[in-house]
Length: 188
Image (cartoon, rainbow, N blue to C red; front, side, top):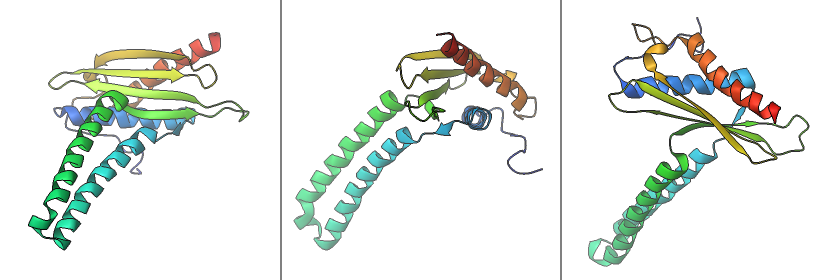
């Protein structure tokens, strides 16, 4: 059996592993079943902010190496302040812009004229809780109207006693949510 088709087995008592396994499976379902193209703009934004923060700290390190401490005091204070502010900006970005979004897929227009439709998957699983919340949001490329559907269910619906993901059950759930939004899209 290939590595790609191997069943996903995790420690069923590890909440992060449960959430990550379900999120990865949802990504795979959206890409393979519907031919969506994953957009990495949210992750690229976070990566850019982190790169700027690290560059600021590396500049401070290099400046301190070239001009030892008493001479580099002002530059070090400025760089530390910038790093502190940037980590705050990164936290705000993660909280308000990403907010649990783990997948953004673009559905290309068949004619290639209209803007892409956007499918966003967002999930949450609270610590010491078994209730997994999956939210799928559709944003029309032309109309810019947003519709979403959400399902909260126990993770035990998708994992067996050994901690193996029951992919078929989860795939049916994700496809059902997505298809319900697609049906709404066609009805309007």
